[in-house]
Amino acid sequence: EVKPNVITYSTAISACAKGRRPFRALEILDSMPSKGIEPNLLCYTAAISAFSLQSMWKESLQILKRMIDARIRPDEVVLNTILKGLATAGRWIEAYKLLLDMNARGFGLNTNSYNWAVAACKKENQREMAFRLMEDMRIRNIAPNDVTYTNAIASCGGEWLEALKLLRQMKNTSVGPSRQVYLAAINSCSKAKEAIQAWNLLQEVHKRGLKPSSAMYIGVLEACSGSKDFELVISVLTDMRKSKVRVNKRAEYLATRLCTSKKDKNRIDGLIKELEC
Image (tube, rainbow, N blue to C red; front, side, top):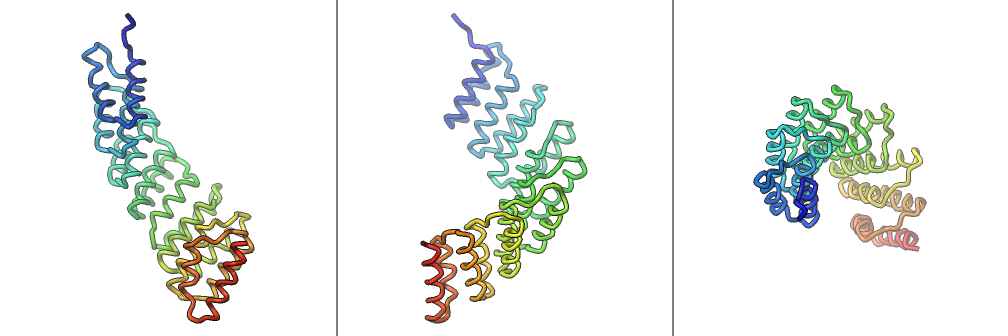
């Protein structure tokens, strides 16, 4: 008879994680000592993953504590798995506390670790905490990447001046702004109804040789609803035509709702028809 070993158990726990059965995974983990087998790093990682995949961050943190109490050092995979679950749930305070704790213990954290923590801030528009995390990265000589900046800019919400400040900061680094970074900045301007700023960012996208996305154009059109600048709407639709970006229902709605006359409506309809061809 072949007796189960630690690999057998870690495989079973991983299967429960994939099958979205986190509590069954925990039962298997808990049963191991009674069989004379102590869980190892792989077992704890699989159990944490089972709960993190379901955004059950409290249970993930509890298993991490058990792991540390058992004197098993968590690696980057474990920590990033928990941080991802916290980001999904928008638990920015818990993510920040976990980073502090792990740094104090000397456990390895990398750019991805901070990216998940900043992503948690993005979900709750916690700009100050996102900026604090980026400063901590600088102090610890952990390089931010495109994802870091995208999430940090998105955390600004409608505080567009702060978003543009961060974008300028990024331009002075070796990490050049991507389409996602510009989209986050445009959306910040959009929330503040800063149509001209959003339009200027769209022109920057062109100058950098990047192709604007449909979401960028929608962001600019959203911003136009605050200024009621009909001519800017025409410019946006014309730009969409030049970039060969097809109009969708959202863009059509945003453009037509700013029409104040039949003449305006005819101009919009004509451009939309060209975009649909």
